[in-house]
Image 1 (cartoon, each protein chain N blue to C red):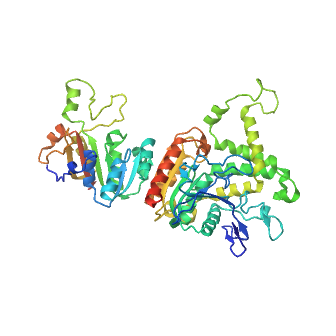
Image 2 (spheres, rainbow over the protein chains, first blue to last red):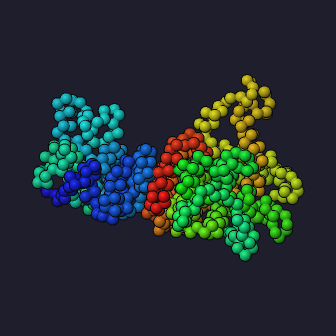
Image 3 (cartoon, rainbow over the protein chains, first blue to last red):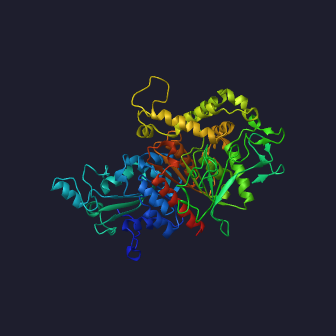
Length: 214
Length: 368
């Protein structure tokens, strides 16, 4: 299975997280965007300043919301698990879920809302199938604590980890069509498209997907 | 600001009120392109003295933590206006004003006031001040209702809106509390069917009871427990009487007595009634989203976790409607155990949110 990928050029835009640049590259200029779990608004600010998007956000932490307010971003304090139901159908061109799906209580319901609210959804997440994670569990017999996933099992906000393969399977279940899929390796660089899925699932630290309703 | 009989206030009750006047305070300087005006809307028992010493009580303004030099509503940068509401008793025409038809106070002949009437009166004032569009409209509780009404009635005149601890409609529970307060006033024999000013009496007891009841709704169980607990007032054991044994009783009695010194009983009836009638969606076929349709105003909604009078769910309903109308809206729920009153108190998270929102909006509007 091969998927079309347009690679961004992070070298030319320093100071931004590579996965943000990858997400930004998937967004059409001037579109309406909702960032679910937008944190301090870095991605929304990047999208506003580089793509001229009309961006909105949902963030669970008050500190995050206040940081967004200071950036002039209209962000609502709320919870992806409960508040997405309030948004009308097709309210946005893109709904982004960046490094957040693993912290939701009902990832599948959240994904279904994303596809309902947005004409397209962009989802990025840490890949639990990465070889380093597999080694931690398989050889050391410990729940993985890595640079990318720094929490101990008892205090992690990440309650629903998945692998790239798991996510792809769920996309099929909710009727999502994959327009783009990218895996980032340990260095944050996109991996070659021609590689088979099992390689992505083993060597990709993060997956980034552009989805739409089928 | 006086308006003659030729410039009456057209009220929802179907009355053209005139002549009428509106009392207001301003702070700071209007800039050359008249783009830095901020309107502060006061709550039920507030007044125009938001950031200066109150001439009646001698106490500091009611929102000096929010409005003043270097405050989130910075009077060094913005031209701040605050006016007493129509129906009030601090200089704006209300039931205690003289009815030109009779030469006596209006009392209950004053037309019933609505939140929209309050906003109409403010708009007339803003017109007279030569201000086309307000940079920001800010208010809490009933002030927040006015903020929302401004955004719906005059969307093109409101660049940004900051409604705090408020609702788009008054709840049944809140109407119920208001009714208890009004009945307390009207049960006082000195109320005299509302004509106490003409007859030289004052329904102080009734108004004090109304205030005591209302004051409880502005606090929270947590705040009451923290402040008073079951502590006795100047004694170590109960007196086996109906004296104010407990600190909380003494506190409420004081609040009641202090209130009647500064507030007119009939104004209390009228202004509570205005809040009861407030239902922003009603004038738009029951759809709050439709009320905000097409708005270009930037909104920031703030609520408090322990506010049970205007709970977070009320604010979320506003946010929900603004989202459905594709409006630009931010929302923060501030963690506080101080109840509804929190919006008037020292709440750093509220100030941080307000400052961030106002500063960002000022940058976009190009205000230095």
